[in-house]
Amino acid sequence: MALIDLTLPLEQDNPFSREKPNLAGLGHLGTHLDVIKIPPPEVESFISPGRLVDVNGIWGRPLEPGDLDGLDAAAPGEFLILNTGWLAAKYPEPEYFGEHPELSDAALEALLAARPGFIGIDAPGLGRGKRHQQLDSRAASERVFIVENLVNTHRLGPEPFTVYCFPLHLADSTGLPVRVLAEL
Image 1 (tube, one colour):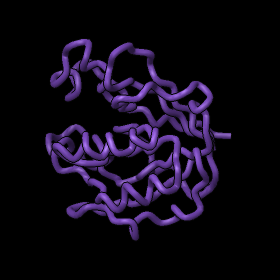
Image 2 (tube, one colour):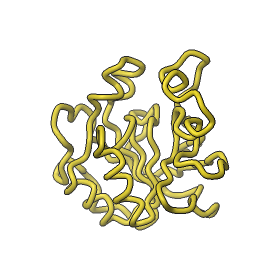
Image 3 (tube, one colour):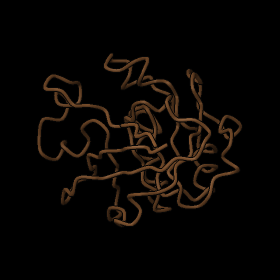
C-alpha cells in the first residue's frame, strides 16, 4: 500500500492567499471542493474508488470526449481525476490561473454520463473565466463535486486506487478546502 498526497500545500506567500484574503475566500484556497447551490457531499462519499483520466499535455484547445481515454470503464460514484500536467508545469506562474486546460461542454457531459461522485483536476477549474462557474453549476446539477488544484496526479496510473477526500466544514461557503489522498 502506498499513499499519495494530492493536496497542494499552502504557504504563507502563495497566489491564493493574495487573491482571496477574507474568510469567504478561504473556501477556495489551494486544493478545494466547489459547492454551488447544493449541500456538501455526504460523509460516506469521502472515501471512494478512483480512476485516472490521463489528458496530460492537451493544452491550447478544449478537451473533447475522445481525449478521455478509459472513461467507458468508469463505475458510478468513482472519483475521476484528470491529469493534465498543468499544475506541475505552470504553478505558481500567473498563466496557471488564466490559460489552463478546460473541458468542452461535450467532454463535461461525457464525464457526467459516467455518474462520478467527484471530478478532480490538476488545474484551477474545469473551465476558464465565466465557463468555470457554468461548468461547476452543470456538474452540481447532477450532484457531482469538482475538486481543483490537485498535485501529484502524474503518480497515479491505470491500476485501481482509493481516494480519501476530506473537506473542511465551512458554513455558507461556495468552496471547501480539502485534503485528498490516493491509496494505491
